[in-house]
Image (tube, rainbow, N blue to C red; front, side, top):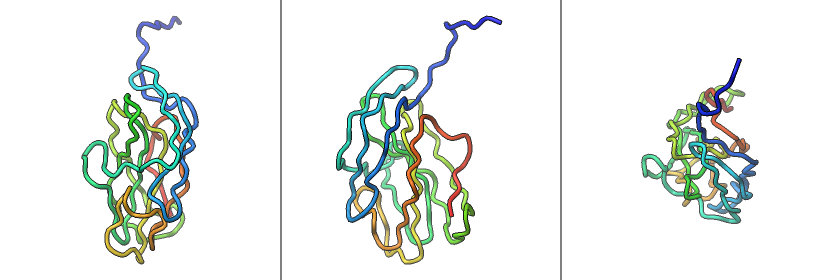
Length: 163
């Protein structure tokens, strides 16, 4: 069997560990390390983020990313070719059954101009008051639960389950 390198396909891959952190406390910021990545086969490097402003809108819809009581969604963190930090949010799902791995969260459709670095599930419990908004509401707002960050090199092949 021969392999033709001329027919190799380009892909979007995070080529290091983004190490997304800081999604805690009375803050709206985040931290990550510098990471090389590829979009459509072209190599880039995302710079270090230290206490960086969290994007406030979805990179695809330009809408605010929100939750109200008893809702959950997955946030896909990444960047475009210019190295701009971006979040693309999955659809909102009802979150009332907190049994282990009981709630299936769908990933959003990711455009080929976006490289996925990490995913995190955010849940608004029954005690959440009003609307919680990514980038302007504190990570530790009453009722908000942030699942552990999963740093990624590419998109998972299935939905994400949360308790």
